[in-house]
Length: 365
Image 1: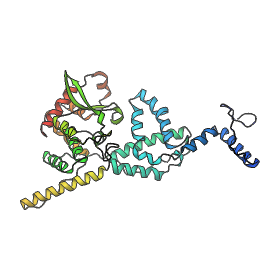
Image 2: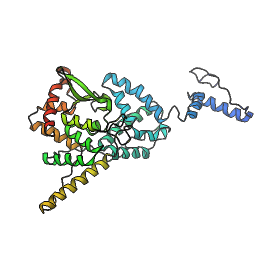
Image 3: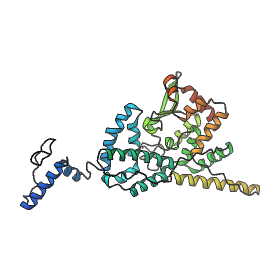
Image 4: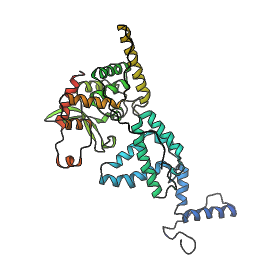
């Protein structure tokens, strides 16, 4: 503070009281508010302008942008594309329910509500990932003194990464393929693409139109989907080479004119309601199994519980049984390589990945 009670640092600014002319008592009160704001390092004029626009310098959307620029962007230079990854998670549609509120006003109940919605729409793994990015945001905001308490600290949640070993038999996988064909757009072709590629659910469900590419490989143009770093778990991006059945499915999708290939909103947003889609698929499977058992006059044996991510494990297992080398399968799945391999092995395995996908695709042609 300066000698006369003014802030000891920062540029002095003149603030004019609003018209019409205020009574002395009101003017004095307003002047004290301006001086108090200045003493706390707040520009009163900017604060009033922000309130008029419906947000403040400490609102959720403003601090998310500052977090991305001031924290995630510098981290990107050190270890992968952290900026795009943070933006991808912290700007998801679920976060917009908080826009217009100050980050300091977000409570544990708000966080639980948001994570419950993410779990219902995207699954437990997505909820865990969202919590991780929220934790970094709140920790940064606390360190920067934008908030005084961190509501996400010791947040009690039930989501845990479930270590699963379930592998569907080829008979079961074909049942899923046929049931998906009965579902129709968007979930039917989405499930079939998961079977054809072994990709993560979000990698297919959030696929954008411009990610379909024609890549030159050994002098020939081949179809592929190029996932940018912001959408890939590794933060480095990933290329999926497409078999003929995969190309046929993507070509058969309705042209909604929007950004996303799999959508319930004319391409404006990616497909949502994953849990409802899976429940519907399970009902179709159960009905088909019951009908087949009735024809044989046998008791129906329900399909053992399975998750969408089990498809990815099933694809990897079958590729191995077909004789595809393990390191080729790892690259098909888009797994991050060990640091030693990234440093010394510069071969991109593009042809090996495509060959594996073509061989797998032949089973579904």
